[in-house]
Length: 306
Image 1 (cartoon, rainbow, N blue to C red):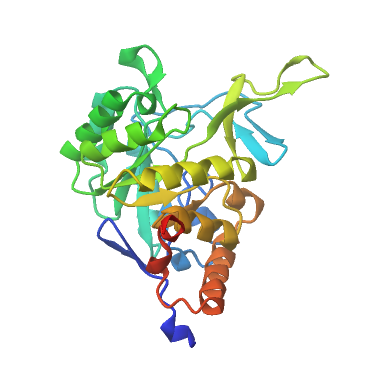
Image 2 (cartoon, rainbow, N blue to C red):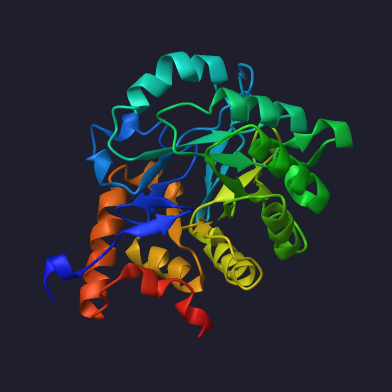
């Protein structure tokens, strides 16, 4: 099989991506930060660091630590706010020859709508809606843990944008399929899963929690079986595309997510280990397809269900 016969391109919510490899929010800034390490235009898409309505300082140190098979973080959505992003970061993002998704987080349903409207501009292909944030009006629970709240956020965003909307789900729920169905009913164009798993670490010397926020989000290889399970389950319940992430470190991991039902995948913790991992994953997927005599990568999606 020649190179020309291997088609890695995908359709994600009506957007043409040259391949299914995306970056995960919070692991490579706006994508510009990867330029010293790789040809960013080779990626299917970039998902930018989480953006909020106003400037957020984030949590104090320590807010990042390595665990067995994973990484704990409690960054706290540090960013300079959406207006700073539009004025200073988006012009640089626009120079990258790939799709860009803006990741947004709000404290209220209304904030999500304001963010969606502000970001309904040229240079942004779509929005990724993080619903793992505290729901102030419901007493501090994350929007992503209650189906009705998840649907309400999705509907609000859709009302204020012409862009494609991915909703990023929290795995810290009893039934991920109920949340997935709620955001699909709310008009989501696609689903990203999983976000990080809630975890903690304790320092036996100081006898205190290691992270300043006590709890943090666990990512990396340790969470991959959970992510795979949830993608597999959600694929059986919704008709919109799924972007799989959680512990993908190489091409083999990426292929497993696609077999479980993911149309595309995101690389998160892997970027922190090797900023050029995206290119390696793309090359690895292509080699796999040639070895298996697979002509079109789209044929891999959900194949583990057959």
